[in-house]
Length: 129
Length: 477
Image 1 (cartoon, each protein chain N blue to C red):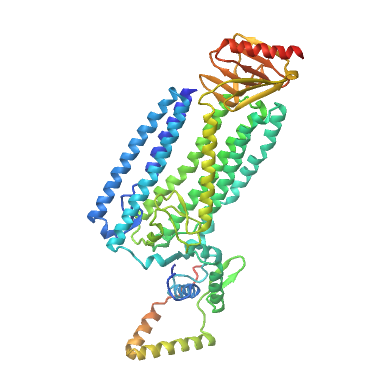
Image 2 (image 1 turned 90 degrees about the vertical axis):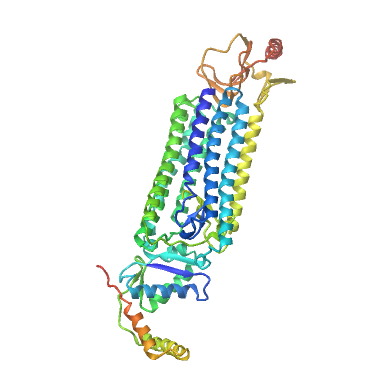
């Protein structure tokens, strides 16, 4: 997948990187078992600090999207069951988004349609092996 | 001698000018989203001002190279008139060519950039975007040739120090005779180290995203990394082979090396340059074919950092980036202080070498053989070379009607149709120094403990005067 980082954005680089990798896994652009670039190579290609990439990988690992092996490096994990912690986070973020949409005058049907479109565009891919 | 110099410089010129002309490619054509090194939308390439700039650039570029090829070629004929004048004229021509080349690239680029800004063709957002292809980055380590291929040849080249030291011991070579071979040794090892350093720099160079298709990005990045590193490894091995060849013969024959040794050494050096450039040229052509066939190319408008004609981006951590005007080149990021320091050091080294060479050559403009006597010490001097010896060192002094009938090899000095000055070796005479005007007789032959000195003056009576002084000194002993 191709990751685009906006260096002029207010969103921290490690958050942008994390979000793009998660979206990539969700859309099936990164398959389960696929190897991610090494921390050093990713930092080199992006022209950013290795600590930034390392922080992203640690977050992705904690969230259960990737696993980090000393020999193989970072690899994408297969889609799993939603954990309780994730559900809480999702509900919290959806609550905020719902409040913002409601305050901006968006109708429920439209909000639900956008949610459905987004969700159906996700096709996590299993490992080819 | 003159014919050899003529052909060496002529062939060099015939390689340098077309190589520069074609390696920069056709910058007036729209490639990789750029024209004259500036990103502009594809819809703007037929704008009258853009077409006018490109046409003017194309005309000047062609004319400049045609004129310089002619001037460079004609300057070589000065070899037959005066060697020193030729070197000065040729160096000035080369300086003019290098400066002209930079001028012709940078000035149209700046004009194009100003036009782009004036017309508002700037994609402000894209210059802040960094793109990474995860598949390319993950495969990056396997794209380049392993840098360890440099180690055996580096070790072998460095180990020839034993051949040189042993050669010097066997043939009683003095430092004055030996420093050119040490200079060649340093160059041999230094080039191997340079190729290794450049190899590592290429391996660490960031991968570029050319397209939205990963396959295209993989092919383009692999082509560049593979060809650069292959070129460095081939060049390093050929460089090592050329020097080891020279060191082996130095060990066998000492400083009196046969001409064929230099011939093969030069041939290997030419092969080295070809081995470095050929994979690069091939990969540039293939990469262009791949990118031109791509339908979903994506470009980052980073022209702001190139607006002066060189790369200056303090926000980019990379010190070396791919050249904007020639993809076979690498350019330094002058937004980083290290680039300025490195450039200053390199410039100082180049200026130092030029001054040193000029001083060496200046000594040969008007060669005058000087003979002096201070109490018991005699000294011959000419063109920066000198030889001092005491009375007790003189074994014999002879006045020859002609030079001994044997071949002398110059080991460190100058030799033209007018004079022979410096260190030489003869098959029978062995180690000797010459302070000779060619075609003038008689010639003084002074045999010393460890070598022989040949000297003369353009005036016969002066040579006879020197002979009397030396013979008198030798007789006193």
